[in-house]
Image 1 (cartoon, rainbow, N blue to C red):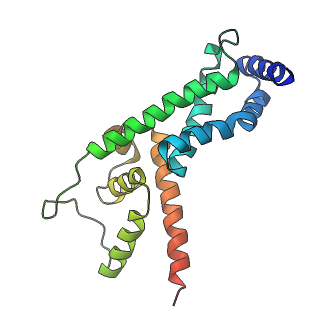
Image 2 (cartoon, rainbow, N blue to C red; image 1 turned 60 degrees about the vertical axis):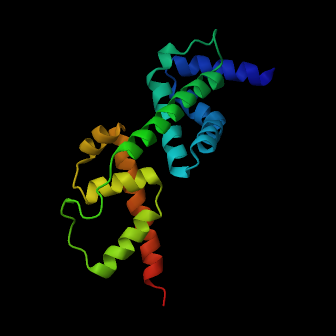
Image 3 (cartoon, helix red, strand yellow; image 1 turned 45 degrees about the vertical axis):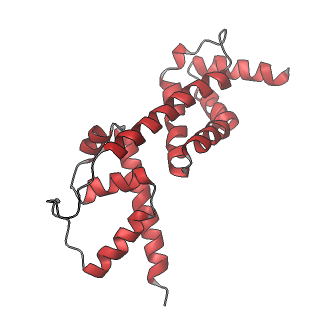
Length: 181
């Protein structure tokens, strides 16, 4: 019974715009949101993105939360399901974007030494399929973040996050591998 009272109090404070309630909601139910996203999407990076989008969407639309219809965790799960569906749809659209066939005119890639190109391609291949697509569009097709978002139907922040995290992962792996004999 105490948990129900706490959830209702957090829900009421959340709806009223109390940022401490947002922190509490994330602390108490962020793991649930993340777990649902990870189980459905199978990629840590995608689950992290969904979790972030869920809490941003919930905070922006907090005035639509009705504690008489559902408690805050149930409302967050509803938002999570919609965000997961959106992520699956973005994957579907990404997969539908044709990649150039061998021999087709490809956009000019930045000059990279042949050995380095193989290494970079191998590191890109280790990224999730969505991250691979975003990185390739950014660096081999020279599209802006906005253009990538429009082409793939992704929010601009997601595109930027994917590129930043992908480059950080690649850099860390290349730095570690670089020192290997």
